[in-house]
Amino acid sequence: MKIKLPVFWIIYAVSAAAVFGINIWLKKPGGNLAAAGLGILILMARREYGIIQQRITFVGALACVAVMFLYFKQLSPQIALGLGIIFCAVYFFSASSAFYLNNLTAEEGKLNDRRDKLKEEKEGRISSAQLEDDIFEKEIKDIRSLYEAAEELGSSLNLGETTERTSEILKKIIKNNFKIPLEEINFLIIFKKEHEYRIVQSFGYDDEQLKGNEKAFVNAVLKMGGKNQAHFYVPDMSKVPSENGQIMAMNKSMIYIPFIAEKKLLGVLFISGSRVNMFDTKQVDSIRILSNQIALSLEKVHLYEEVEKLSETDSLTGLYVHRYFQEKLETEIKRTARYGGKLSLVIGDIDHFKAVNDTFGHLAGDYILRTVAVILKNHTNELDSVARYGGEEFVIVLPDQDKEKAHAKAVKIRKEIEKYPFKYEDISIKITMSMGVAEYPGDAIARRSLIDKADKALYRAKEEGRNRVIRA
Image (tube, rainbow, N blue to C red; front, side, top):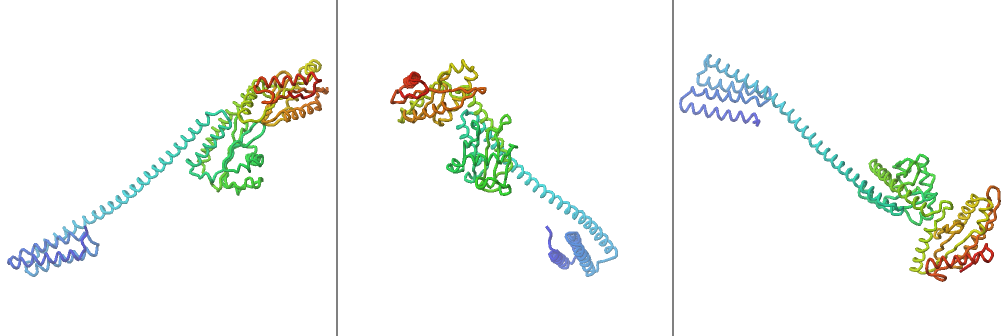
């Protein structure tokens, strides 16, 4: 601990006076050598101060000792020389000690600075390691979420169920993993069904708006992808010129991820945000990884439905097969019985089809069957079911239609077939069809009975001259 310079002088003065007084009282002048010792102590203490203060202390201590000896007339050349030597030795010792002490103090300061820096670096590294550990833990959690989502998606073979699960998984990841409020997000899942792309799942959009402008939305999204069909992220839509007007005006940022399988575009995941820079790079990568699993799931569903469709449809006409027709009719009868209403069945047979095969060949007959199938499909709606019943026989299941409406529809189809210009290898072929109509529950309440009633009505149409529709 460094003591201030005046304090040293006070201590020295008091100590010297005490020694001086005691010596006079005891009449021992020689004892004043002790006062010289005090001067030496102050001389040693001088190393605590600056250069000027050190010199003043040195001269002052020397002067005080000299005064004491002169007062008692005890100072001789020998004593003066001895004291000088002692003072010089002490001065040299104290100066050397001060030099090394200063060096040690400087080194100690450097070591303390180094220690503080190391401490800061250590704390910084610990903090950085903790941050990296938190980030790594979050990434593991996100990867685990994606893995669980992939497992969940892979368990379904139904398109509706798959897209619904995909929607829920997307919402969960955006809300929990990305910490983005769902009200700031919109997304569309577009999938190719048969020969066109349809919106199979949506979130954040008005259902009525989508329903009335589905094709416009689909075309706008597909147009953004262009021919490249690679995933991309647009953080600020205002910097991208849009040709789609109000359809894309609501989007401030967007992610476009195509579902590709065997170089074919199965569909698109389109995610948009209500503000710019909605997503960061890691979030986009996470969605892209998830989209790969979505694409695989959709491809599996697509293949499964294709196989199912092949097992349910006739390879020549593309209509449902006899087995599917029987199951569908049974299902519709049960539904009608449960909820009420009526159901009609139409059975049709191409007139003189054997003569067509015999005259023009079986390839011509196949052409006739395919064309008639197209006419039947074109004159029925999505709720109706058209199937190939036998060789040249066809059936139509008409839910929620009574016998009169079914008869009118059958007459329209018959007339369309009659006037259609069938032509095979430049040879015109005249084709007509006879039909029978029966109604549930008016004509029959069981599947087999209903088919039998319609078949008998068809038989009567044949007997009465063909090319006509008869009600049961």
